[in-house]
Length: 463
Image (cartoon, rainbow, N blue to C red; front, side, top):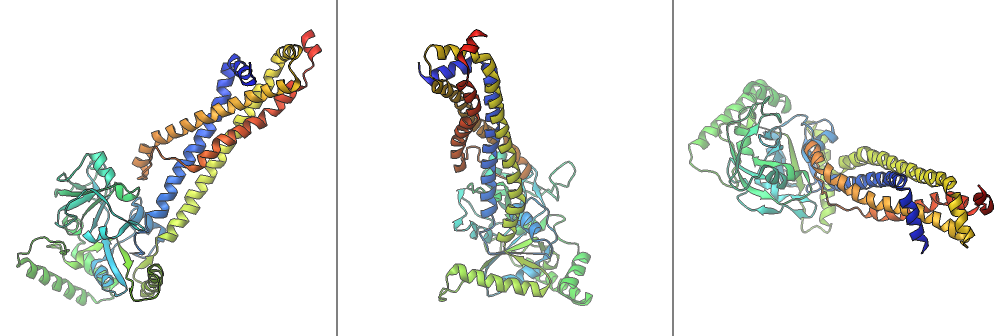
Protein backbone atom coordinates (compact mmCIF):
# COMPACT_ATOMS: atom_id res chain seq x y z
CA UNK A 1 0.00 0.00 0.00
CA UNK A 2 1.60 3.29 -1.11
CA UNK A 3 1.61 6.62 0.69
CA UNK A 4 -1.16 8.19 -1.37
CA UNK A 5 -3.49 5.24 -0.78
CA UNK A 6 -3.00 5.57 2.96
CA UNK A 7 -3.49 9.34 2.72
CA UNK A 8 -6.69 8.87 0.71
CA UNK A 9 -8.10 6.45 3.32
CA UNK A 10 -7.32 9.02 6.01
CA UNK A 11 -9.11 11.74 4.03
CA UNK A 12 -12.15 9.49 3.60
CA UNK A 13 -12.28 8.76 7.32
CA UNK A 14 -12.73 12.48 7.94
CA UNK A 15 -14.99 12.98 4.90
CA UNK A 16 -17.06 15.91 6.18
CA UNK A 17 -14.10 17.92 7.42
CA UNK A 18 -12.14 17.09 4.26
CA UNK A 19 -15.07 18.10 2.04
CA UNK A 20 -15.47 21.46 3.76
CA UNK A 21 -11.76 22.32 3.68
CA UNK A 22 -11.45 21.24 0.04
CA UNK A 23 -14.53 23.29 -0.87
CA UNK A 24 -13.01 26.39 0.72
CA UNK A 25 -10.04 26.03 -1.64
CA UNK A 26 -12.40 25.43 -4.56
CA UNK A 27 -14.34 28.60 -3.76
CA UNK A 28 -11.21 30.75 -3.79
CA UNK A 29 -9.97 29.18 -7.04
CA UNK A 30 -13.42 29.54 -8.65
CA UNK A 31 -13.59 33.25 -7.83
CA UNK A 32 -10.07 33.77 -9.16
CA UNK A 33 -10.89 31.96 -12.42
CA UNK A 34 -14.10 33.96 -12.87
CA UNK A 35 -12.25 37.23 -12.25
CA UNK A 36 -9.46 36.30 -14.68
CA UNK A 37 -11.83 35.23 -17.47
CA UNK A 38 -14.23 38.18 -17.19
CA UNK A 39 -11.37 40.64 -16.81
CA UNK A 40 -9.69 39.25 -19.93
CA UNK A 41 -12.89 39.62 -21.95
CA UNK A 42 -13.50 43.18 -20.73
CA UNK A 43 -9.84 44.10 -21.36
CA UNK A 44 -9.99 42.86 -24.95
CA UNK A 45 -13.25 44.75 -25.49
CA UNK A 46 -11.88 48.02 -24.12
CA UNK A 47 -8.72 47.64 -26.18
CA UNK A 48 -10.33 46.99 -29.54
CA UNK A 49 -13.82 48.47 -29.81
CA UNK A 50 -12.90 51.96 -30.96
CA UNK A 51 -9.86 51.31 -33.13
CA UNK A 52 -11.68 51.02 -36.46
CA UNK A 53 -11.47 54.81 -36.90
CA UNK A 54 -9.01 57.54 -35.96
CA UNK A 55 -11.14 60.19 -34.26
CA UNK A 56 -14.56 60.83 -32.77
CA UNK A 57 -15.99 64.33 -33.12
CA UNK A 58 -18.66 65.33 -30.64
CA UNK A 59 -20.00 68.27 -28.65
CA UNK A 60 -17.64 69.84 -26.15
CA UNK A 61 -17.63 68.09 -22.81
CA UNK A 62 -16.21 64.90 -21.36
CA UNK A 63 -14.08 62.69 -23.61
CA UNK A 64 -14.96 59.69 -21.45
CA UNK A 65 -18.68 60.38 -21.81
CA UNK A 66 -18.28 60.65 -25.58
CA UNK A 67 -16.51 57.28 -25.73
CA UNK A 68 -19.04 55.59 -23.44
CA UNK A 69 -21.95 56.79 -25.57
CA UNK A 70 -20.44 56.46 -29.06
CA UNK A 71 -18.26 53.37 -28.70
CA UNK A 72 -19.89 51.35 -25.93
CA UNK A 73 -23.45 52.75 -26.04
CA UNK A 74 -23.82 52.51 -22.27
CA UNK A 75 -24.24 56.22 -21.52
CA UNK A 76 -26.55 58.91 -22.86
CA UNK A 77 -25.00 61.45 -25.27
CA UNK A 78 -24.03 64.87 -23.90
CA UNK A 79 -25.48 66.99 -26.72
CA UNK A 80 -25.78 66.91 -30.49
CA UNK A 81 -24.05 68.60 -33.39
CA UNK A 82 -25.81 70.42 -36.26
CA UNK A 83 -26.01 68.51 -39.52
CA UNK A 84 -24.30 71.34 -41.36
CA UNK A 85 -21.24 70.83 -39.16
CA UNK A 86 -21.01 67.23 -40.36
CA UNK A 87 -21.21 68.34 -44.00
CA UNK A 88 -18.42 70.83 -43.31
CA UNK A 89 -16.18 68.18 -41.71
CA UNK A 90 -16.59 65.63 -44.48
CA UNK A 91 -15.37 68.19 -47.05
CA UNK A 92 -12.02 68.58 -45.27
CA UNK A 93 -9.28 67.23 -47.59
CA UNK A 94 -7.56 65.51 -44.66
CA UNK A 95 -10.66 63.36 -44.06
CA UNK A 96 -11.06 60.15 -46.03
CA UNK A 97 -14.33 59.12 -44.42
CA UNK A 98 -16.71 60.97 -42.08
CA UNK A 99 -19.59 58.87 -40.78
CA UNK A 100 -22.44 60.51 -38.82
CA UNK A 101 -24.12 58.58 -36.02
CA UNK A 102 -27.25 59.46 -34.06
CA UNK A 103 -28.44 57.78 -30.84
CA UNK A 104 -31.34 57.96 -28.44
CA UNK A 105 -33.85 55.22 -29.33
CA UNK A 106 -34.12 51.52 -28.52
CA UNK A 107 -35.84 48.53 -30.10
CA UNK A 108 -39.30 47.68 -28.82
CA UNK A 109 -38.17 44.08 -28.36
CA UNK A 110 -35.07 43.57 -26.26
CA UNK A 111 -34.35 47.30 -25.75
CA UNK A 112 -31.26 47.21 -27.98
CA UNK A 113 -29.68 50.60 -28.81
CA UNK A 114 -30.53 52.12 -32.19
CA UNK A 115 -27.83 53.84 -34.24
CA UNK A 116 -28.93 56.06 -37.09
CA UNK A 117 -26.12 56.18 -39.64
CA UNK A 118 -25.21 55.84 -43.33
CA UNK A 119 -23.94 52.85 -45.36
CA UNK A 120 -20.40 54.23 -44.95
CA UNK A 121 -20.43 53.03 -41.34
CA UNK A 122 -19.74 49.52 -42.59
CA UNK A 123 -16.75 50.74 -44.61
CA UNK A 124 -14.98 51.30 -41.28
CA UNK A 125 -13.23 48.35 -39.65
CA UNK A 126 -15.15 46.83 -36.77
CA UNK A 127 -11.73 46.76 -35.06
CA UNK A 128 -8.35 47.72 -36.48
CA UNK A 129 -7.58 45.57 -39.51
CA UNK A 130 -10.82 43.59 -39.22
CA UNK A 131 -13.68 44.63 -41.51
CA UNK A 132 -17.33 43.91 -40.81
CA UNK A 133 -18.45 40.37 -41.60
CA UNK A 134 -22.01 39.28 -42.26
CA UNK A 135 -23.82 36.01 -41.76
CA UNK A 136 -26.92 37.07 -43.71
CA UNK A 137 -25.92 39.52 -46.46
CA UNK A 138 -28.34 42.03 -47.87
CA UNK A 139 -28.73 45.63 -48.99
CA UNK A 140 -26.90 47.56 -46.30
CA UNK A 141 -28.99 50.66 -45.59
CA UNK A 142 -29.80 51.43 -49.20
CA UNK A 143 -33.39 52.33 -48.43
CA UNK A 144 -34.84 54.87 -46.01
CA UNK A 145 -36.43 52.19 -43.81
CA UNK A 146 -33.62 49.64 -43.99
CA UNK A 147 -31.85 48.21 -40.93
CA UNK A 148 -28.85 46.02 -40.16
CA UNK A 149 -28.72 44.14 -36.87
CA UNK A 150 -25.94 42.68 -34.72
CA UNK A 151 -25.59 38.97 -34.09
CA UNK A 152 -26.91 39.12 -30.50
CA UNK A 153 -29.95 41.11 -31.59
CA UNK A 154 -30.73 38.48 -34.21
CA UNK A 155 -30.23 35.64 -31.74
CA UNK A 156 -32.20 37.06 -28.80
CA UNK A 157 -35.07 38.50 -30.84
CA UNK A 158 -35.06 35.68 -33.40
CA UNK A 159 -34.88 38.21 -36.24
CA UNK A 160 -33.68 37.56 -39.76
CA UNK A 161 -33.84 39.15 -43.21
CA UNK A 162 -37.28 40.67 -43.66
CA UNK A 163 -38.11 41.02 -39.96
CA UNK A 164 -39.80 44.29 -39.07
CA UNK A 165 -39.53 46.23 -35.82
CA UNK A 166 -40.47 49.51 -34.20
CA UNK A 167 -38.44 51.86 -32.02
CA UNK A 168 -39.02 53.33 -28.55
CA UNK A 169 -38.30 57.04 -28.47
CA UNK A 170 -35.72 58.07 -25.87
CA UNK A 171 -36.21 55.14 -23.51
CA UNK A 172 -36.04 51.37 -23.03
CA UNK A 173 -39.52 50.77 -21.60
CA UNK A 174 -42.41 50.78 -24.08
CA UNK A 175 -44.93 51.24 -21.26
CA UNK A 176 -43.49 54.60 -20.21
CA UNK A 177 -42.06 55.93 -23.49
CA UNK A 178 -43.47 56.71 -26.92
CA UNK A 179 -43.29 53.93 -29.52
CA UNK A 180 -42.90 55.13 -33.10
CA UNK A 181 -45.47 53.85 -35.57
CA UNK A 182 -43.00 53.51 -38.44
CA UNK A 183 -41.35 50.12 -38.96
CA UNK A 184 -37.85 49.33 -40.17
CA UNK A 185 -37.03 46.17 -42.12
CA UNK A 186 -33.94 44.03 -41.45
CA UNK A 187 -31.77 43.85 -44.57
CA UNK A 188 -28.60 42.33 -43.13
CA UNK A 189 -27.24 40.49 -40.07
CA UNK A 190 -23.69 41.05 -38.85
CA UNK A 191 -21.38 38.23 -37.81
CA UNK A 192 -20.31 38.12 -34.13
CA UNK A 193 -17.40 40.46 -33.41
CA UNK A 194 -17.19 40.59 -29.61
CA UNK A 195 -17.89 44.35 -29.68
CA UNK A 196 -20.95 46.47 -28.82
CA UNK A 197 -21.95 46.21 -32.49
CA UNK A 198 -23.24 42.71 -31.71
CA UNK A 199 -25.94 44.22 -29.50
CA UNK A 200 -26.76 47.20 -31.74
CA UNK A 201 -29.29 47.94 -34.47
CA UNK A 202 -28.28 50.21 -37.35
CA UNK A 203 -30.94 52.09 -39.30
CA UNK A 204 -30.69 54.45 -42.22
CA UNK A 205 -30.18 58.01 -41.02
CA UNK A 206 -32.86 59.32 -43.38
CA UNK A 207 -35.49 57.12 -41.74
CA UNK A 208 -34.17 58.04 -38.31
CA UNK A 209 -34.67 61.76 -39.03
CA UNK A 210 -38.21 61.19 -40.31
CA UNK A 211 -39.41 59.79 -37.00
CA UNK A 212 -41.47 62.05 -34.79
CA UNK A 213 -39.30 63.94 -32.30
CA UNK A 214 -36.02 63.31 -34.11
CA UNK A 215 -36.03 66.65 -35.90
CA UNK A 216 -35.38 69.70 -33.77
CA UNK A 217 -38.31 72.15 -33.55
CA UNK A 218 -37.84 75.09 -35.91
CA UNK A 219 -37.55 77.76 -33.22
CA UNK A 220 -35.00 75.72 -31.23
CA UNK A 221 -33.10 74.88 -34.41
CA UNK A 222 -32.91 78.54 -35.43
CA UNK A 223 -31.63 79.54 -32.01
CA UNK A 224 -29.12 76.67 -31.81
CA UNK A 225 -27.70 77.30 -35.28
CA UNK A 226 -27.47 81.03 -34.72
CA UNK A 227 -25.38 80.36 -31.61
CA UNK A 228 -23.30 77.56 -33.14
CA UNK A 229 -22.48 79.36 -36.38
CA UNK A 230 -22.48 82.85 -34.81
CA UNK A 231 -25.30 84.02 -37.08
CA UNK A 232 -27.86 86.73 -36.59
CA UNK A 233 -31.48 85.56 -36.25
CA UNK A 234 -32.14 86.87 -39.76
CA UNK A 235 -29.22 84.93 -41.23
CA UNK A 236 -30.36 81.73 -39.50
CA UNK A 237 -33.89 82.18 -40.87
CA UNK A 238 -32.55 82.75 -44.39
CA UNK A 239 -30.63 79.48 -44.13
CA UNK A 240 -33.83 77.75 -43.04
CA UNK A 241 -35.72 79.18 -46.02
CA UNK A 242 -32.97 77.93 -48.35
CA UNK A 243 -33.32 74.44 -46.88
CA UNK A 244 -37.10 74.53 -47.42
CA UNK A 245 -36.58 75.53 -51.02
CA UNK A 246 -34.11 72.68 -51.55
CA UNK A 247 -36.60 70.18 -50.14
CA UNK A 248 -39.39 71.50 -52.36
CA UNK A 249 -37.15 71.26 -55.44
CA UNK A 250 -36.06 67.73 -54.62
CA UNK A 251 -39.65 66.64 -53.97
CA UNK A 252 -40.49 67.62 -57.55
CA UNK A 253 -38.11 64.96 -58.86
CA UNK A 254 -38.90 61.27 -58.77
CA UNK A 255 -35.58 59.73 -57.83
CA UNK A 256 -36.25 56.98 -55.24
CA UNK A 257 -33.79 55.57 -52.75
CA UNK A 258 -30.24 54.71 -53.72
CA UNK A 259 -26.91 54.13 -51.98
CA UNK A 260 -25.56 57.64 -52.22
CA UNK A 261 -28.78 59.38 -51.15
CA UNK A 262 -28.79 60.69 -47.56
CA UNK A 263 -31.36 63.45 -47.62
CA UNK A 264 -34.52 62.93 -45.55
CA UNK A 265 -37.61 64.35 -47.23
CA UNK A 266 -39.53 66.87 -45.17
CA UNK A 267 -36.74 67.55 -42.66
CA UNK A 268 -34.55 70.57 -43.26
CA UNK A 269 -30.82 70.34 -42.68
CA UNK A 270 -31.25 73.06 -40.07
CA UNK A 271 -33.43 70.72 -37.98
CA UNK A 272 -31.20 67.66 -38.28
CA UNK A 273 -28.58 66.79 -35.69
CA UNK A 274 -26.02 64.03 -35.21
CA UNK A 275 -24.68 62.73 -31.91
CA UNK A 276 -21.11 62.31 -33.11
CA UNK A 277 -18.98 61.85 -36.22
CA UNK A 278 -16.53 59.00 -36.79
CA UNK A 279 -13.44 60.06 -38.72
CA UNK A 280 -10.92 58.07 -40.73
CA UNK A 281 -8.07 60.25 -41.91
CA UNK A 282 -6.93 60.19 -45.54
CA UNK A 283 -3.44 59.00 -46.50
CA UNK A 284 -1.22 60.04 -49.40
CA UNK A 285 0.02 56.93 -51.27
CA UNK A 286 2.97 58.97 -52.63
CA UNK A 287 4.17 59.93 -49.16
CA UNK A 288 7.26 58.09 -47.86
CA UNK A 289 5.63 57.88 -44.41
CA UNK A 290 3.77 54.73 -43.44
CA UNK A 291 -0.04 54.96 -43.45
CA UNK A 292 -0.28 54.64 -39.66
CA UNK A 293 2.15 57.51 -39.11
CA UNK A 294 0.35 59.64 -41.70
CA UNK A 295 -2.99 59.10 -40.00
CA UNK A 296 -1.54 59.87 -36.58
CA UNK A 297 0.05 63.09 -37.84
CA UNK A 298 -3.09 64.25 -39.62
CA UNK A 299 -5.23 63.30 -36.62
CA UNK A 300 -3.18 65.56 -34.34
CA UNK A 301 -3.40 68.44 -36.80
CA UNK A 302 -7.14 67.93 -37.25
CA UNK A 303 -7.72 67.71 -33.48
CA UNK A 304 -5.84 70.96 -32.97
CA UNK A 305 -7.96 72.76 -35.57
CA UNK A 306 -11.21 71.45 -34.04
CA UNK A 307 -10.07 72.60 -30.59
CA UNK A 308 -9.18 76.10 -31.80
CA UNK A 309 -12.53 76.36 -33.58
CA UNK A 310 -14.15 76.00 -30.13
CA UNK A 311 -17.45 74.55 -31.39
CA UNK A 312 -16.81 70.83 -30.89
CA UNK A 313 -14.08 68.46 -29.78
CA UNK A 314 -12.21 65.68 -31.54
CA UNK A 315 -10.74 62.84 -29.53
CA UNK A 316 -8.82 59.69 -30.27
CA UNK A 317 -10.85 56.89 -28.65
CA UNK A 318 -7.72 54.97 -27.63
CA UNK A 319 -6.65 57.24 -24.75
CA UNK A 320 -10.04 57.48 -22.95
CA UNK A 321 -10.48 53.73 -23.41
CA UNK A 322 -7.07 53.10 -21.85
CA UNK A 323 -7.93 55.37 -18.92
CA UNK A 324 -11.21 53.54 -18.41
CA UNK A 325 -9.35 50.23 -18.46
CA UNK A 326 -6.61 51.35 -16.06
CA UNK A 327 -8.57 53.50 -13.65
CA UNK A 328 -11.88 51.64 -13.50
CA UNK A 329 -11.49 48.08 -14.71
CA UNK A 330 -7.90 47.79 -13.47
CA UNK A 331 -8.76 48.86 -9.93
CA UNK A 332 -11.76 46.56 -9.74
CA UNK A 333 -9.70 43.68 -11.09
CA UNK A 334 -6.92 44.30 -8.54
CA UNK A 335 -9.41 44.46 -5.67
CA UNK A 336 -11.14 41.24 -6.75
CA UNK A 337 -7.84 39.41 -7.24
CA UNK A 338 -6.70 40.51 -3.76
CA UNK A 339 -9.99 39.28 -2.34
CA UNK A 340 -9.71 35.89 -4.04
CA UNK A 341 -6.10 35.52 -2.92
CA UNK A 342 -7.21 36.18 0.67
CA UNK A 343 -9.92 33.53 0.28
CA UNK A 344 -7.36 31.00 -0.96
CA UNK A 345 -4.99 31.85 1.90
CA UNK A 346 -7.81 31.45 4.42
CA UNK A 347 -8.68 28.13 2.76
CA UNK A 348 -5.06 27.03 3.15
CA UNK A 349 -5.11 27.99 6.82
CA UNK A 350 -8.34 26.03 7.30
CA UNK A 351 -6.66 22.95 5.82
CA UNK A 352 -3.70 23.44 8.14
CA UNK A 353 -5.99 23.79 11.18
CA UNK A 354 -8.11 20.81 10.15
CA UNK A 355 -5.15 18.45 9.72
CA UNK A 356 -3.28 19.83 12.73
CA UNK A 357 -6.30 19.40 14.99
CA UNK A 358 -6.70 15.83 13.77
CA UNK A 359 -3.21 15.04 15.00
CA UNK A 360 -4.45 14.67 18.59
CA UNK A 361 -6.98 12.04 17.49
CA UNK A 362 -4.44 10.25 15.32
CA UNK A 363 -1.51 10.05 17.74
CA UNK A 364 -2.29 6.40 18.55
CA UNK A 365 -2.78 5.58 14.83
CA UNK A 366 0.57 7.19 14.00
CA UNK A 367 2.27 5.38 16.93
CA UNK A 368 0.96 2.01 15.69
CA UNK A 369 2.30 2.75 12.19
CA UNK A 370 5.67 3.61 13.71
CA UNK A 371 5.62 0.45 15.86
CA UNK A 372 4.94 -1.64 12.73
CA UNK A 373 8.07 -0.24 11.12
CA UNK A 374 7.03 3.02 9.44
CA UNK A 375 9.80 5.59 9.49
CA UNK A 376 9.36 9.17 10.65
CA UNK A 377 9.81 10.36 7.05
CA UNK A 378 7.02 8.04 5.92
CA UNK A 379 4.57 9.43 8.47
CA UNK A 380 5.55 12.98 7.51
CA UNK A 381 4.99 12.17 3.82
CA UNK A 382 1.51 10.72 4.49
CA UNK A 383 0.37 13.91 6.24
CA UNK A 384 1.88 16.02 3.46
CA UNK A 385 0.10 13.85 0.85
CA UNK A 386 -3.25 14.49 2.61
CA UNK A 387 -2.71 18.23 2.39
CA UNK A 388 -1.73 17.99 -1.29
CA UNK A 389 -4.82 15.90 -2.07
CA UNK A 390 -7.17 18.38 -0.44
CA UNK A 391 -5.60 21.37 -2.20
CA UNK A 392 -5.31 19.64 -5.58
CA UNK A 393 -8.88 18.33 -5.43
CA UNK A 394 -10.17 21.74 -4.36
CA UNK A 395 -8.18 23.43 -7.13
CA UNK A 396 -9.52 21.14 -9.87
CA UNK A 397 -13.08 21.48 -8.63
CA UNK A 398 -12.55 25.26 -8.37
CA UNK A 399 -11.56 25.42 -12.05
CA UNK A 400 -14.81 23.74 -13.05
CA UNK A 401 -16.83 25.82 -10.60
CA UNK A 402 -15.21 29.06 -11.84
CA UNK A 403 -16.19 28.38 -15.45
CA UNK A 404 -19.67 27.39 -14.28
CA UNK A 405 -19.92 30.79 -12.57
CA UNK A 406 -18.86 32.53 -15.80
CA UNK A 407 -21.36 30.47 -17.77
CA UNK A 408 -24.16 31.40 -15.35
CA UNK A 409 -23.14 35.08 -15.10
CA UNK A 410 -22.69 35.65 -18.86
CA UNK A 411 -26.36 36.31 -19.76
CA UNK A 412 -26.86 38.46 -16.64
CA UNK A 413 -23.80 40.61 -17.40
CA UNK A 414 -24.85 40.92 -21.04
CA UNK A 415 -28.37 42.00 -20.12
CA UNK A 416 -27.23 44.59 -17.56
CA UNK A 417 -24.09 46.03 -19.18
CA UNK A 418 -24.16 45.04 -22.85
CA UNK A 419 -20.77 43.30 -22.50
CA UNK A 420 -20.58 40.09 -24.50
CA UNK A 421 -19.00 37.26 -22.51
CA UNK A 422 -18.05 33.94 -24.04
CA UNK A 423 -19.02 31.40 -21.36
CA UNK A 424 -16.42 28.96 -22.72
CA UNK A 425 -13.54 31.46 -22.65
CA UNK A 426 -10.20 30.28 -21.25
CA UNK A 427 -7.56 32.54 -19.73
CA UNK A 428 -3.89 31.38 -20.00
CA UNK A 429 -3.28 32.56 -16.42
CA UNK A 430 -5.48 29.67 -15.30
CA UNK A 431 -2.57 27.34 -16.04
CA UNK A 432 -0.80 28.53 -12.88
CA UNK A 433 -3.77 27.73 -10.62
CA UNK A 434 -2.94 24.04 -10.18
CA UNK A 435 0.80 24.61 -9.49
CA UNK A 436 -0.16 27.30 -6.97
CA UNK A 437 -2.62 25.03 -5.16
CA UNK A 438 -0.05 22.23 -5.07
CA UNK A 439 2.50 24.63 -3.59
CA UNK A 440 -0.13 25.78 -1.07
CA UNK A 441 -0.84 22.17 -0.12
CA UNK A 442 2.83 21.50 0.44
CA UNK A 443 3.23 24.64 2.52
CA UNK A 444 0.26 24.09 4.84
CA UNK A 445 1.08 20.39 5.25
CA UNK A 446 4.50 21.04 6.75
CA UNK A 447 3.42 21.94 10.30
CA UNK A 448 1.02 18.97 10.77
CA UNK A 449 3.64 16.76 9.14
CA UNK A 450 6.31 17.90 11.60
CA UNK A 451 3.89 17.22 14.46
CA UNK A 452 3.36 13.68 13.19
CA UNK A 453 7.11 13.32 12.66
CA UNK A 454 7.78 14.14 16.33
CA UNK A 455 5.10 11.86 17.75
CA UNK A 456 6.37 9.89 20.77
CA UNK A 457 5.55 6.25 20.07
CA UNK A 458 5.73 4.95 23.66
CA UNK A 459 3.72 7.83 25.06
CA UNK A 460 1.03 7.60 22.39
CA UNK A 461 0.60 3.81 22.84
CA UNK A 462 0.49 4.03 26.63
CA UNK A 463 -2.23 6.74 26.49
